[in-house]
Image 1 (tube, rainbow, N blue to C red):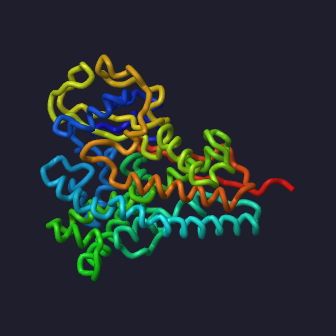
Image 2: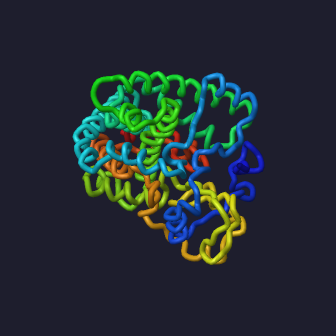
Length: 388
């Protein structure tokens, strides 16, 4: 697969984007609903090809990621997805709301305590980072442990697979990914024989091998919580800088919090793009695409492809750039199973934070951002008590 940029240290917007960028919502939906023509096989392939030293680190750990769920274009996908979907039913998600609110209030209280002691706090670390990880593990029936390491592994793996690290950075990230994989392999081994119901045990009962379970778990334990953390982080930042359609005080209500989360999802979600590849020569938007065409689907506003020129876009590809919120979590047979959970978590955590910290102000108006091919969010949301 081609690297997503000319230089490993630059974002693709600094050079010609090597993907065919599909922005029109109707074309995006068309691609997502034609999996036989537009395969998900490249969805989890490293954007920057891994070099020998990094590959050797992964090989020594027995690192293997066979296609199981998000990148699975075979007939096994439907049965596996049904097993996972059983942990994300509407009733299950709704039943988690009291627990989410409990975690959100605890986190907001921690932030308030930090503000009282020092006059400032980082809302990414105090309120956005850990509740989604706890919720995900509990929802899947897995033990809640090693949360700080899980958060670090998640960010590192995102950069390894969706970023543009040079050789030295690749080596660091590969070491982190190998550490995560070893931890995950132990967790899978423990879980498949544990009493009670959990996702890994259910997947083993469905007939998946330990390696296949590890592959599914590797990306699910990242995407299932880190993308929600990033959604919360962006929403908090936009609210506090005054760029959201509602104010901070209004967000202390359920309606206000839900409204602003949906706005951010539609305009600047934590997963703004996703990839597909043509399985054979096919048509899109009135144009003909050859087999093997790498496609980048825009799901919501993002900085990575802004201003880039699409490669050989079909004639109608640029028509109509309005984005539908219905595409933010994808569409079709690979739509995100955790969509309702992510929206609920974000709204509850935003609401409880605004209610607990009514007078805070943004301390850093220009934070560093995570800017990867398919993930974006501010790394910090530093706030302070108002003067006087």
